[in-house]
Length: 65
Image (cartoon, rainbow, N blue to C red):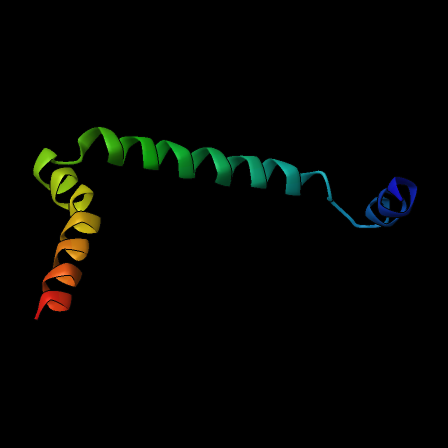
């Protein structure tokens, strides 16, 4: 299986750039995500973390009616 893939990739011009582009995209994505997590406001994190509980409470209130 690997020979089949490797053989086809050898025929593509400048194929060595694709792994570098993929690594760059992967790295940039996680750096941006890490930056967002570090700079996120605590109020926003608290609000988002309570969403499942609020939804559960709303469903219980609707069932009681």
